[in-house]
Image (tube, rainbow, N blue to C red; front, side, top):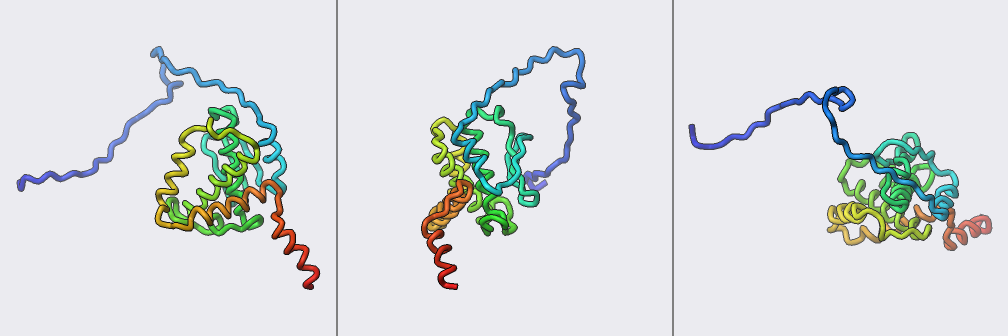
Length: 200
């Protein structure tokens, strides 16, 4: 009556069926891509050498680390475009696992943080940098990984662009995560550990 438009949301639903439930239609479905995974020896040694690491399950389509069960889940290696994509994803989740209370007890992992929060973003950045450090240690060619990895990292950097110290603190935490997985004890930590009995 006043010449103004009003937009309202209307709840609708659609009935869908699995293709296996439908007869009489000649479906032309794309053939699933068959890939063969080529294990990378150095990367496999890093994974196998992670002393006291989490249990790794190869299943599903969404990689994740679950603190409550201390479990890393990644899709089967053949589901990835390249071996490098598989290992960088696995290394990302393993980097998350180093933050568990029984390992490095990283606050960005152990604190409750909402998706998209600064704490959540920092933990994702730590894991992504940790994956890059581990990939470098394994000699992986990151130039052949999917472009989405760089976009993923850029997303968190964009979200936290006002924190000038973020990259420094995240890189420091990521290096500690990579060292923990690789079993490297920095010399300054080893020196201080040796000094403790003398002080006592």
